[in-house]
Length: 287
Image (cartoon, rainbow, N blue to C red; front, side, top):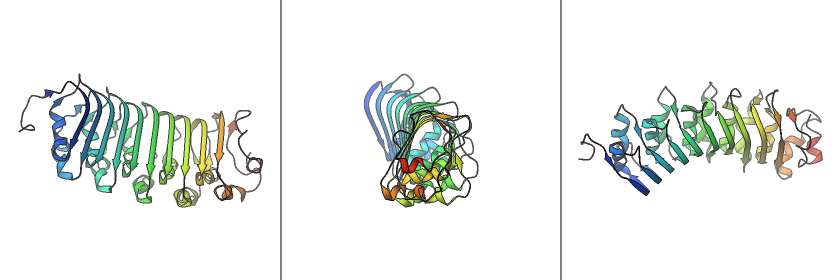
């Protein structure tokens, strides 16, 4: 009955709005342009729950939302949202199954993520980054977190690199570490890049490739645990000058670096004092 009506209805100012399963479709009938919602959560456990939303041609606007979370099949709804003029403080996409993001990955044209302060992509939702148009976006914090190797398979399989635009702080966690090899160094500006991997397997994909990858323009780099070893495969854009470079790890985490020859790892230009936190035995490997 709700989906059959032509005229949208206004919900006014709402603190928390949770739409689950078939109720997700109701959002297309809401007039949210002039509304203020603190937290909007869409959660759909079956593909049929979002079929009505994905079938419509015209995108809908979600208005001003502080915190938006899309779970499972509801992740696909993002392709039908008009986010260009939206301002979202926290935007989280979480997909535990590959099928949850199929609708997003199947489309050819990228979609605009609008103005987002903090964006979190978890598990299979990490693959959605390849379909976002981020070149002209400014994101304060972008976090990609993948707990399984399969979560990033779609990203690693593609040949064409993607651009993350201007990001103040970017976090790549666990298997999402591998995504860095598919990022385009062109037109990217990253304030602080955080790389963290709690298991050796998380960086295996990066270490297995023959050619080094370039991370483009970045001011500060912070690398933790097993992620430290990726500097043996990393280069920084020649026109870039880093303010600081930090490595944190124990003997096991740093073992791959210590196997390298002295002055064999090229990190690019780093300001005076930018390597103060690096142990001397690691500094000897850098040039």
